[in-house]
Structure formats: C-alpha cells, structure tokens
Image 1 (cartoon, helix red, strand yellow):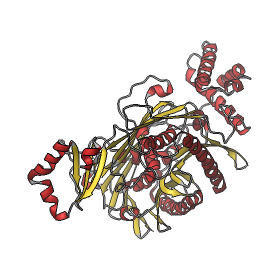
Image 2: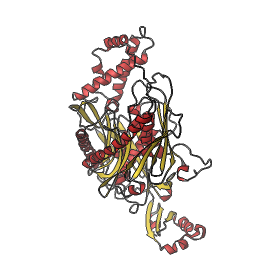
Image 3: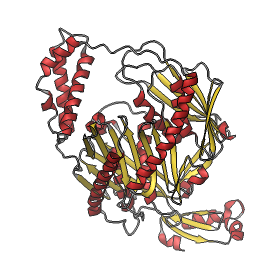
Image 4: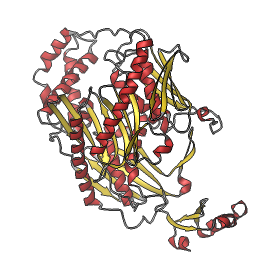
Length: 603
C-alpha cells in the first residue's frame, strides 16, 4: 500500500492505492476529513476501432451507509442516480474527457463511490481528484493528472474546500479544475460577484490545484504503470488526395453565412455527393470521406472566423436578434417566450405552498427544496426524431446551471413564502439554450409577480485561438461555433455582477488577460440582453396572477400551537375545510395560510 498526503485548509487530503479494488486498471482511496471516496478506473484491453466518439463512462454514487443511513422506499437500496450524483458525474467528466489522446477508443469506465461521509466534506471534489489519480497510475493512456478544488468566500476571505458549515456563510461557491499549468473547467455560483473578483478566485484556486497535482505526480512516480501503446492513426493518403481533388474550391461556399437548416442541409448534401462520386473506387470508406470533409469545413470556418466573419455573418460582439413575449399562456401563474436567433425557450413559473417543496433524501439527511428549475430539451428542438425515454444528464446539468444563476435574485422566503417551480421547454436550439433558459426564467418570474431582487440574463461566449496574438472571442455562440471552438464560457448575472458561470477549455492554458477580456465582453453582451428584457418587462408585476394561490402570514404563541392544531389535527383541518385553504405552522409559531380566495385568507 502506498499513501500520499497534503494539508489543505487545516485538513489532511490523503490518496492511497494498493489496498482496495486491485484488479481495476487503477484504483485509489481518497480521504479528506472523515469523508472517504473509492475510485476505480478500467479500460478494455486490446485495440478497439473508432466508434465516432470516445466511450467514457463516469459513475459517481453516494452510498447511504456512508452516513449511517438506510435508503427509504420499499426496496431499501440505492436506486437510480439522484440529480446531485448526476451533477457529480458531470463535474468529473468535463475536466477528464479532453485529456484522453486521439486514437484511443477503448470502452473506459471510472466508478466513484462515496464510502464514508462526515457531513462536512462532500465527495464530488474528492471524486475528481481520485478519478485523476486512478487514471494517472493506471496503464490507460491519459494526459493528466488534474485536480479540483472548491473556493468559498466568507467576510471577503477566500477559502479552499470550505466545509458545509462554512459554506452556509459563503457568498460564492466556485469549483475549479485544472492541470499544473492551466485551468480547464470552472463551475460555480455567486451572489453578484464582480469580474475582477472572479478572476482572483480562479487564480487563488489554481495555486491549490498545483499542490494536489504534484501530490498525484509523486504517487505516479512511485507506483504508476507503463501506459499502453496507441497505434498510430493510419492516413490513407490516396483517399485524401482523391477527396481534395473533388472538393477543391468548394469548401468556402459551404461556410457562407446562412441559417442553420440551410447550412446543415447544404453540408449534408455536399458530403453525400462526394461519397457517391467516390463509391466505385472507395466503396468501404464512406465514414472516412465524410469525416475528412467535416474537418476541412471546420478548419475553413475557423480561418474565416479569425478573419472577422462568423458562420451567420455577425461580428464578434453582436448578440443575435431577440424577441420576447410574456403572459403567453392564459392559465399559468407566469410565462415567457424568449427567442434569440434560432434558439427559443418557453418558460413557465408556478407558485405553490410549503407542501409542494421537493423532498431530498440523500446521505446528507432529509431536506426540502423550495425553488426548482427543470430544463427539457425535446428532439424536435433541433429538427430530429429520436427516442426520448427519460431526463438526460445534459438536461439535468443545464437546468442546474440555470437554477443557480437565478437563485441569488429570488426573494427571501420570509418575504415571499412560496415554493417556486420553473420549467423551461426548449422549442428551438442553435446554441446557448441554457442561457436562454436563464433569461426566460427571470422574465417568467417577473410575469408571475415574484419580487425578484434583479433581472438576470445569461450569454454564452466562445473562443477560437491559434496563439496569443491571433484569436477571436465570440459573443452569443452558435451550435457550430461551440463545436469547433476552443472554449465554451457561459456567464449569467445582473447589471451589478455574476451569479453563475460555467467554463470548459479544449486548449492547454488560457492567459489571464484573455480571460479578463472574455469576461468584459460577456458583461457587455449580458447588459445588452438585459436592456432588451427591460423593454418588455422592467420589473415584476404588481400583483400575482388570478390563478396563483394567495398567501397570508400570522404568528401564534409557541405555547398555543398544540391548541391551534388540535388533537390529531382536528382544529386545523376544520379551519382549512371551512375557508378552503392550506395552513402550515412552523415550530416558531409562524403560521402561513394559502388559498385561492384572498377574502378567506384575510379572515
């Protein structure tokens, strides 16, 4: 057994290997405080052919026994992954996936299991560290290691990996992943943080990441396995030369500015025409022909963008045309239709009582969630017909990002004691549907009469970069630009500051000055969108929808709560039935009455 340790924020982070799961390609046990996470990574042996994608599976699971709990329900065992666990999977997948080398297509699995939870140190950050360490010491080809940290801020002081108790006082929660040289992923929320403060957080977090990466390198030096050889990708030069002759001078026309459907149809028809023309000489190479043409199209579009012309003809800073409608659905409590270019989100806000809160049963204990945002992405939104069985990880991740962006703007529960559910239906998509959800959600809340602290908007930024002197920062990226770009950078917030941010880099390193420029350009785009939103709805409606439940609040002496409720709830049930309302009483005597008739509530 080999063990390496480091002190972080007054607690010891330990990575050990050689004691558990020894038949995996690589396995480690990560301990921080009394939280223990086992990570095992395995890849199929041999050489597997290309499938058009890299089959990587990240599975993050929190076992109830980790905190001394037995799962609820009839079967009394862990069921399908919770939203929290799915977010944990994504937080590990995003920094790891780009570091697998081209040409490696073997089925690869990383299992992250929280075995012990101390109530203060969550397993998600440890899972990413463990996943990196297990891959780094294994024979699986991979260009890590990486590490993740969470940064909080209490009374202006930045804290690495704050405990859950400390996080209750923190005004930001930002997860940063990176190598020893650069940041590769950022995910977080904040209470209206400035761009300069955000950059300070990134730099502060990266210093801690360097120490954790160094710890992993020491582990690899002592017990790392030799990496598998990846066969060189064979280049069929004869095939490529034949394709070049047929496509010469035709690629630029495919990238001329046009709408999404016209562009995609043109590219699809062009690829098929080349395949048909080469079918006799190269009958088995359809996939290779299409892939080669797609690479040529992407390279040409990157060059065209760097020369100043984007796929739809915009300049770097222009936001697509925006149209907004509110109160679009007659019987809902609040609704908005937000359209930006070819991306469209219909958001519906629903107000409910305390009984409508979402119950969360996980290793942290039983809890309740007052504010929810659900994001739905049906296949028709991108003109496709495919099976839709359940909510995807992507839908959960996008909904979570939008929810965190909106959360700081919501009123305190004491001032507005409603459970709030937002649902975003993506009706069309050509890039940045999660940020359209943020804008539509803020408008839907205001349309419902929710007294938000400030309107929130979001914008997706992109980057195409050849070097530090030749790059293009793109505002409000298209789906095409997201695919071929070097960065996906989503920023949401108000006029005063950032509330949520998500960044994924596909390149090694992003200079801090370039990141500062991207943040400033994102702020300009965000304020432009807020200006357009203001034209439709400057602030929240002065009254709730006639279809929304009405609420009244009062208080009763704590020693009279039992008399008010009555034996078996007899008194409170009788009052609820007589006045057609719901009544909830808190332990401190606060009484909340909800119903459809304001006169009954006032009575």
